[in-house]
Length: 616
Image (cartoon, rainbow, N blue to C red; front, top):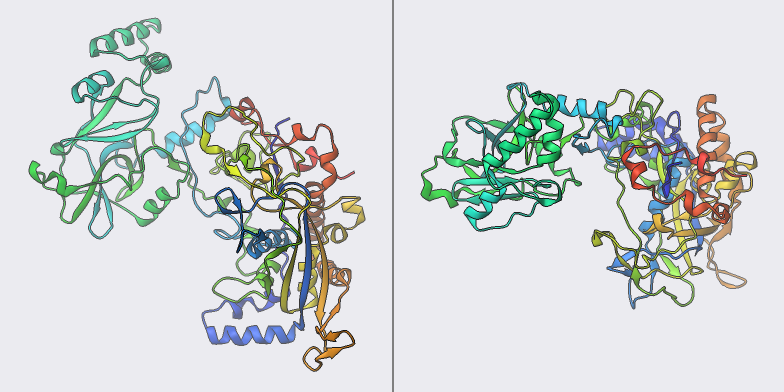
């Protein structure tokens, strides 16, 4: 079974509308005065008269780390660690989204960007890549030229606008060895680069040279080896191509010459295409937007650049009828999926006409403010830190691994552009009782190792959530995430011991915390009394948390049966993933470790959360 330190909470069938949703049209209209009046009317009509404090007691069951200054824990003064209110807010906001069947908004709850990819896998070795390889080739088919990909120069003008000018003819090429001798340099075959020599610019890509780094010294030698390979396949060039690529590797560097350019016309590059290129955070190698050469440096060569040109850099691109579709470094460059990550969210969960509970309580940017405020968590007692050490691998989420992030079926692997592509749900990390340290494990890339100084387990913090003008259903929704087992009910939660995750290093077992809460409501005489029998009158009375959760569940019970059943499934998976009992399984660490490389390369599917662990 494929394993990972994370899994996904299933998405609900639709958004559970909050009481505020009935006012959506006025609250989110263009008339700001009408929106303000509607907000006041909502607070009055929906009986939003509950104000108070939720006291939180937070204890970490595994070492806890929240970044502040390098490897040190976040601190405000005197190096005393605190839990930032923003961290507590973010954790609870996500849980309110899940527990109340919230919307999934682009660029708020999920990235709206387009992921980039390149598909050149061998079908005999990776049969799952057939559809993706085909899709990649189709995307590289241009509207103007049949072969699609063209060489050219990307030019930025003094106003910051971009155009690409097609190169006249095919690029020149030179053997790596000849290039090194002619320019007295050494090519790093593992890196991509752009190197200028006069008006000629050389474009190297990674994995240059033959297998084991061997080089060919003359064109004649290259042709001789190539012909020998062709002979083995009866002169059939198509059949011989895989063997030629495998045995000869990349022996040539391509280059372009500014003197051969015709600058009379070019393809505009839209702001959308430029921004999409910038959003490719996993690219590595050459970033064409950052390595443009100032055109003034070519003033002595008599080159008639386009008017207003500021910088120039070689590129390869695919053009539509009037403008550039994609561009990159090297002929087989990365291209974006046509669909964004957000496009894989079911339409029912993107309904902009519904205000969900998280938006109603925490606020919706540009429309109305939130009614909850989070204090920093203050440490109770002395700080007791672990010894600073190298952490185990801390990898960023990688949604390009679509077999893990998208629902799959028996008909083949779905990628982001596949028909019916759908995200698996809310990502959440499993609890682990494991050693977070690297313990001397050899790593090829030391950048994935980080120095950390986490707090030892058993540290306790006190914090407060301050709320104003909530109604009983909204307060119940907020409290529901602080007593998930009660909210789910015994039939669903069974005997789950609910523990939360916060901070950094969740994938290596850090940040499992237990939270206890106490509800204090503002008393009716809060502003008319100064003293009580013990001194200053605080003006709060303790409230019944379960009574308000019941109010929320009563509101939920008035919804359609499909949504209610969907909510029960969400809560069942959530209880499984948050149950602390899981760490008592002797084989648990092997069930939630990162998968083997072979499993990843074969694009094996991640099992459902309840296939990994289910509340007994």
